[in-house]
Length: 397
Ligand SMILES: [Ca+2]
Image (cartoon, rainbow, N blue to C red; front, side):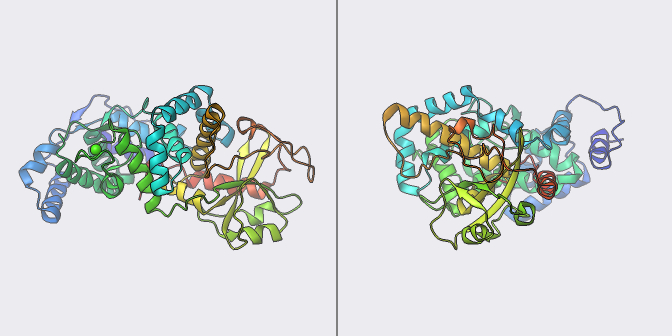
């Protein structure tokens, strides 16, 4: 009997009654699927079979990892609860500290790549609380467990395990060294192995790419990820939207990629406030998130879409944006400096009734407000989004 395999099946079928072994077990490299993996890696990349098998022999199958990836708590949280995880005085304070410590480097990277300080700081803060929570699992264990004992995602994680082996070879790392999340996301920016190999760069020029210890490598790698995914320097990210009397549900985007334009939204009667692209042809997508007092509407632009390439979730992207802005605002207030890329959102939400004036609110108050009337179609769309956007894997593609 293979208890882990059954657990994984239960995650899919919902049977959920099985009593499982809790202890870690070494991966059995004699298994047919594991032997097949070894052969594939050998044939594709010329890696010695015995070397690959001996690395995999170090892997331990961890039931906790399967539990973590199957956990229902990973699923839908309303925006106001999700946001509250990140927009705390503690995390914003840690972001200000991080930005002060690495300010010169952040500004140099921003000047060179066009990816601003607030995005770099927002990503590192949301991903790992500025390095406080980078994950305690051995990446080898995480990827082997999910590749061989979690059928719903085995294809994806087999691919990441293959990338991990290549990464070890390229970086000269010990197989048991790298640690990360239960899904194999590594270091301060939580890059999975395929992202590590494709986008991580050596910022400090020491000949290695170290996403755990070298802040320079971390920041350069995140900036490179954004550049590679089309970040537009200085362009707006997201604005508040007030649908007013418009049927917002009919305008709401069905996916992450903006499907309409700034001009079309305005023409339909949606009012946009905050930093908005000048061109009416600029791509825009209306989306709704669940605030404490009801739905809140936003228009995301091209750069907002780029943030969702890092993690495919609207809430994730908005949290990165807001945390980065809060840090930048505090930093700017302390030094009197202003970023050319920084466009603070003031006055989003807090619409008492339809068609009334916006009240100016601070960034931290932005979402504790009462927006326009609830729209059941938009709520339905929100739930559909939420159901489709809860993948726990970072940088998945
Ligand atoms: Ca380096």
